Length: 192
Image (cartoon, rainbow, N blue to C red; front, top):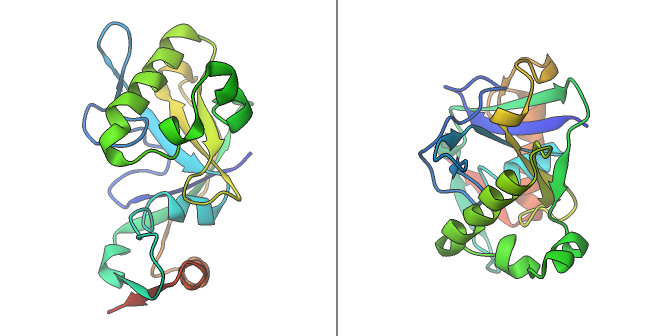
């Protein structure tokens, strides 16, 4: 499985967020001892990575929406190939049913619920020592899967290949793919 990432250009493609800063669905996280768990988000496609990052806050509203091109600048698109098969806890609808947690409470929730969703991730991390991360059908792009990796559960060099990152605006192929995705979700990229 290739991991697709869109990330700020100040970070290396395979750089884990060391925590404890941020406010995402499953990060920042702390382990049972209270130490920050390094995390890395990704998706199974470029479109998923874009929907989970630069297009994440596009409102679910009819009609034309705009995003300033400057908001895309200083971001890179990277692809990582794990050195070994990853053991991810499945947060798909069937697995969540077994836990008694509706998808709406964990994956479909809004930002104000993130402290609770992070508590679930911390509990999974604590209770499942062989799990290296979480995987779920992306809320933003239900044709792909999103994932988060726990840096403390992976070997020192967890990726067998790390392609050179490309600027998402300057790289013609990547920017064309983003324009096509923007059109699908009713967004016009504006400005220079």
